[in-house]
Length: 308
Image (tube, rainbow, N blue to C red; front, side, top):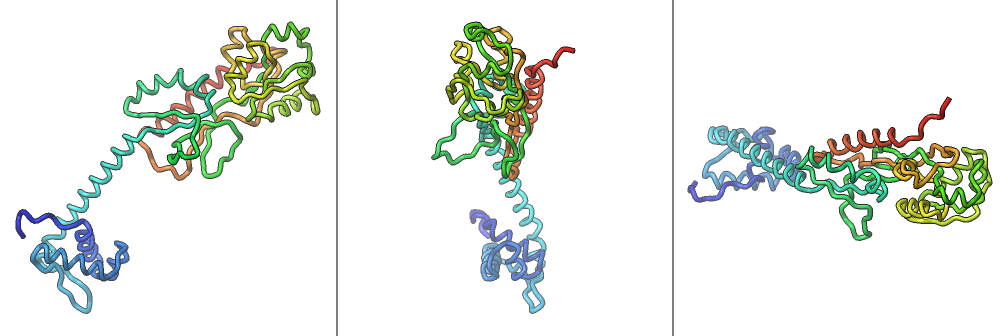
C-alpha cells in the first residue's frame, strides 16, 4: 500500500471488525444495518486497499487469515478513536449551545434576574439564554420552562417553585377613598385588577372566604403582573397577586394587604423539563440552583403565620 494512499473508510473498518467478531457477513449485515452484499463489498474493498486477503472463506463461515488477525486490533483501535473523537465533538457542541430558558416575564423581573449573576459567576462556562415569547416560526424548543399552572404537563417532569400564596393587595389611598376595608365581602365594592391568565383567582378567593357567587363591582384585565402591580399602586383597583410578586411593594407600604386576606391557590409557578431530554452540560447544575433559590424565595415571601 502506498504511503500516500488515503486510509480506509470507517464503514469498511466497521464491516471488517464486525465480520471478524461474528464470523459471517449475514450476521454482520444485521449488526451494522447494511445488506449482506454491501458488507461483502466493504470487505473486498478493504482487502484491495491493503493488498492482502483478510479472511479464509469456507461453507462454515469466514475466519481471519494471519494478515487479518494482525490487522484487526489496529482496525478496532481506529474505530474506537473515531468514536471518541465524535463524542468529544458532540460534548463540545453541547457546551457551545446555550441552555434555553423560557419563562413568564414576572418570574424574571421579580425573582430570577436579580439572583442570576451569582450563578453566572459560579458557572462561567454555562451560557443561559432567556425568553418569554416563542414565535410560531421558532423551531428550537426551550430546554426548560418556568410557567404558571397546575401539573401534570404531559411528557414533562415538573418541580414547584413558588407563587401559590396569593394575597389581596391595594394602595392605601384606595382603601381610604373607599371608606376602609372591614370584611372580606367589601371586595365586591371595588374594581378588580385581574391577570387574564389567572381567572380562577377570584373563584378561589371567594371560596376561601365563604363568598361564593360574589362578583366585583368592575373587572379590568391585564396581561402582565408588572402592569397589574403598577395599576394597584396607582390606586386603580385592588388585585389578587402571588405574594412573592408584590413583596417589595408590601414591604415599602406602596401596597397593603387588607385584613391579611388571601388564599393558597392551586396554581403556582413551576419549572418543567422534557422527560426524554438528553444530558446537557451545566443543565442539571442550573436546575438544582433554580430550585434551591426558589425554595428560599418562597419561604421569605410567604405570609407570616397568624399571631396567637
